[in-house]
Amino acid sequence: ILVGSVLLAAPTAAAPADDLHALFEEYWANEMEENPFGATSSGVEGYDDKVPSVTPEDHERRREEAQAFYERLEAIDRNELDKEDALSADLLEFILKHDLALAEFNGWRIPFLADTGFHTNFGYVVGATSFRTEEDYENYIERLKGLPGFLEQHMENMRQGLADGFTQPKEILPYIMPSFEAQVKDNAAAHPYYKPFVDMPASISSRRQAALRQEARAVLETQVIPAFARLVEFMEDEYMPGARETLGAYELPNGRDYYTALVKYYTTLDTVTPESIHALGLKEVARIRKEMAGVMAKTGFKGDFKDFIEFLRTDEQFYPKTPEELLERAAWVAKD
Image (cartoon, rainbow, N blue to C red; front, side, top):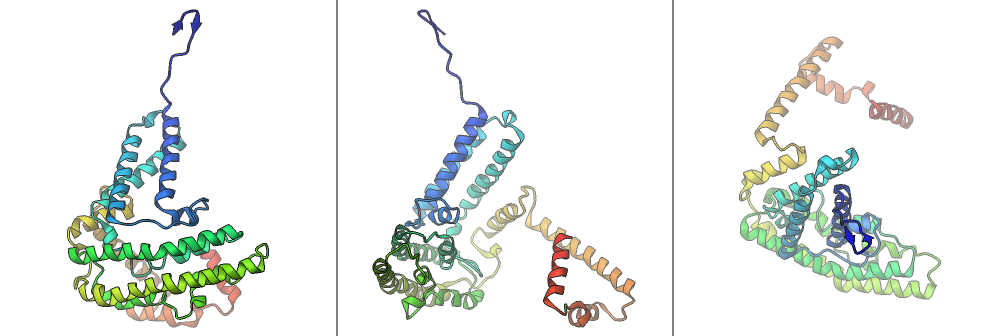
């Protein structure tokens, strides 16, 4: 462009790779902002005093954010990307596509599984938290103060699940309750969340260590542990009596569509159905059973299949005699 006697370069649009990298950075920053627990686990600083907000409005906002990121990603010409960037774009597309698909079912109404959940995940966050400075401990105490609100939001979400018939099966809840009850301690110093205060860095003065320990015990005793006690009471008085009598995800409201969406997510295959995966499973079981029958014949084993399984489980030749033998065999199997 000629302006007077000066030649100016015409403005150019950002290259697809530049747009993609900017999208990656914004998406990651958003993920850290929305999930400060994940930020801590990822070693990202600046979030160690925060807890997530998990109200229905928060989940709806995250769905809208995912939709905006998805639309930006789809607008990028991937034919102009190199192989590595194209693969990264495909992976982000997978994440966003399934985040959006699963968001339609409001799975936040069931925030726990048989072996983990919102009430236990913070233990992993504690293990990932850096405790080197006085500020680290101060941030952690602030995070502890935020836990009761976090638990209360989840209880409200579960109440919505009760109203909608979208709950865990009643049958499994007695086996899960110990994981809730374990969070209630008579002595704050015995609570797992107090563990970072047991051994503190020598760089923190003894007086300051004592003050931080006292504050942590007070927060646990007056805020965190009572909040977990209210959660246990909620589980016993409201959730367990009101939970559904049915079992599989198929039996949830809109359960068939929900289960199908989960199958596509966990298999990473858009074309599969629960029925096709079940058929594949039956086919594989038959194939493996046929191979096992061949092994039985090859070894000359006398007896039926049930007898052969019992033989494999009980004969001493299949058990290591020393720790070294176990490690040697396990290492070979892992490599194989």
